[in-house]
Amino acid sequence: MRLERGGSDDFLCPHDDVPLPDDAHGIDREAEVVVVVDDVPLGATAAQAATHIRLVMLANDWSLRGLQPRELKTGFGFIHAKPSTSFGPVAVTPDELGEHWKDDRVRMDIEQDGASIFGVIDQQLVRATQQG
Image (cartoon, rainbow, N blue to C red; front, side, top):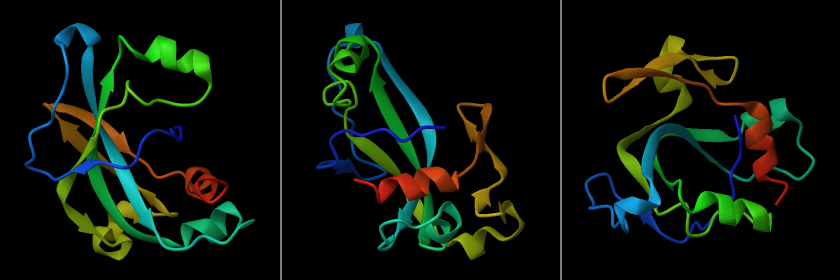
């Protein structure tokens, strides 16, 4: 699990066309579990940060694998190698996940293109969002 930093000025709706450049850039997508948090206080512990999770949703995380090596060398994060993220059409509260929300984590199989992925929210990642 990792927290990635990149441009966050442009998000796509569930049915928007995704403007992607040349296939030669190695276009790839991954299903991601996303959380929306309210104000997480500076210095919050992982457990405290998890209490600020308000919504859980899915997103398509697009990557341009051919551009990533150059951007990794800068240490700044992804700018061109991570095009706009497209979000799923539904966001739910953790309690709506019922038995699939346990210990502040999503615990369920999620299917992408017929392959199962496992969705887990990591408290440390939620905490990291408030560290700037």
